[in-house]
Image 1 (cartoon, rainbow, N blue to C red):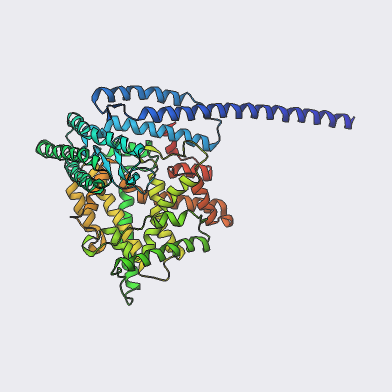
Image 2 (image 1 turned 60 degrees about the horizontal axis):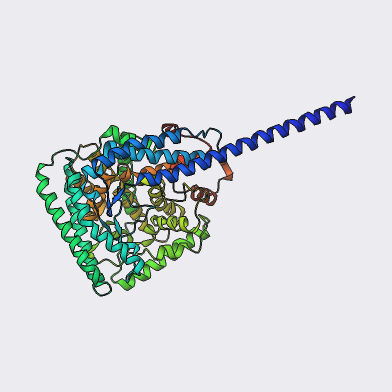
Length: 548
């Protein structure tokens, strides 16, 4: 009887296991089908997000944009109709990323409206590659990315460039009709931007004169259009009297619903003020400890700089490998060597050049950016949604946060032990990020004008290396007005990553290994740190419910 009973139990258990297996298979099949719907929605969404083009000109007119904003709701409804409740965490994260991008477009239409408020939005040429996954701040569709081109061009490359150049006068004519906003600081900075655009086109004409002389008339026509646009902006400037910031409430909404950062404007201000005080204090303590040591000096020639920069890259990668910080791949050294800045003469040294020339290892830590970009190219993420850069700079807490965190983390881990005064540079860098972020926050809340923000950022940065009359401070404050949350992302992202390291270390105890943590971090993709935390720890931040 006992044997018979055991047999019955065994049969029932087998039946139960088969039923569970069947249910799991059905759930997995449903999940796969739903995920395929998400991927298709993502592809459709990315196509929809771009403006329509008419004769090579992106359509940012009122009727076109009103239509896009109305139709956005259809994509949100499609996303809401996909049931993600039974999905693995990774796939649920992908769904939140799509929702965050849709929130970004909605915010553009409701609040930022760069096509209406910001003349700097109409930058028609981009001459340098960003170190981040995509260009920082709002970028006009159809802008010519000159850094992608290598002259002389093939016939296949020449034709589209010529068409884009010929479209520039029409782009700027439409811009005059679209720009009816009253944001004075953005308008003022837009004039400065257009001056830079004219200079880029002038340099381009000289560069192609010998290899593609047929392009020169189109470039010169484009430059005349830019100059005329700048003059028009200057004529309009006296009538522009309104604020440029989005205000505290909108700023906080954007942080939480688009960039998925669990802070408010007030939280970020407190954090930036704390970081400014902390960094200056520790800089002074380092200076005191090192007071008998000679100061760090920049090299006195381009040749000496090349030697110093090359040695720094070798030392940085050796440190990462030997100290088991992260896996060093073959593509990493070329990625760093290609991005060494040229030698800067004393009169041309902006803030980062002052740091870089003294000890290039500090900036090589920040250049984890270029390793990130190389990794995205060489080892694409399995998720088709994380394989491509997120729109609206949603990646900033991870991209800028890690790049900034690496400076102080590697200093603490021993990278700079052979050069104690180099640790002073790390704290000077933190202070500069905090000062410019406070300035950007006060400008976004409309407490300060951009001129006041520029002065504060320069004055609060130690050693006078951050010049108030330099282009760098203007570029940064313009970006932080254009892109809420970007100026603070360096230190908010760093803080979120430090929180994550601490949480993971407590979770794992003695099993925590830095190299394993770093590999998990990279494997998550360049996405908001709040989402990486969910994937790595299993703990879902309440902030993520906002995009459900």
